[in-house]
Image 1 (tube, helix red, strand yellow):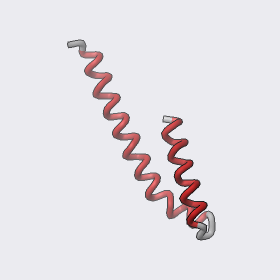
Image 2: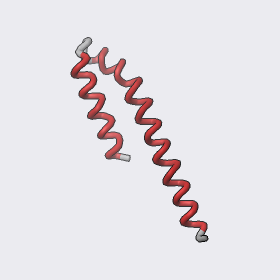
Image 3: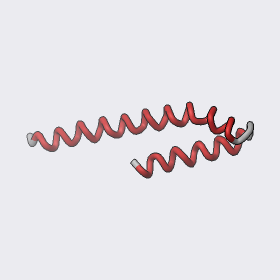
Amino acid sequence: MNYFILTYTVYLAASIALTIWVARVLFNNGRIFLVDIFHGNNALADAVNRLLIVGFYLVI
């Protein structure tokens, strides 16, 4: 088996797992910050939080 394919497969799996983990951490911890920034407006904070996560996935 070609070692390059194996290496790229392992790298791709690790990159996807790390990206999902970082996104979940940012999503969970960022909500508290956004609620504070938007002065308690939970609906707006949740909407912005979801948009930021989508943007994070698109950039990565």
